[in-house]
Length: 100
Image (tube, rainbow, N blue to C red):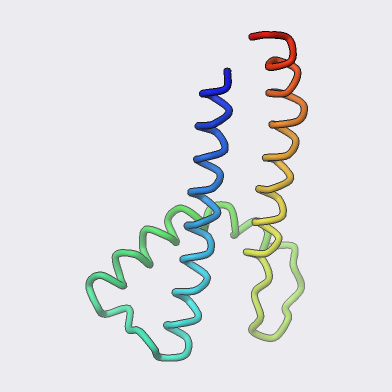
């Protein structure tokens, strides 16, 4: 059971890392530090957006327009962390305490 919990937490950490990379890359593109036409940057951008946009799109749907500031990644990070805490506390902890 510990292996499943470790795998779950590793996947959550990886997803959070992808969110951070996508946010930082969008800032770098916005400030013209990097260019999306670069093949490597474009590949990272497409990969990050493919993983994060399905979760960010519904969040952006109910957020008010803040004049170019997108706080949906922050809410996604908080939500992912809340799910992690719930799963670790209420699903894995009783199973581990029970000896499974």
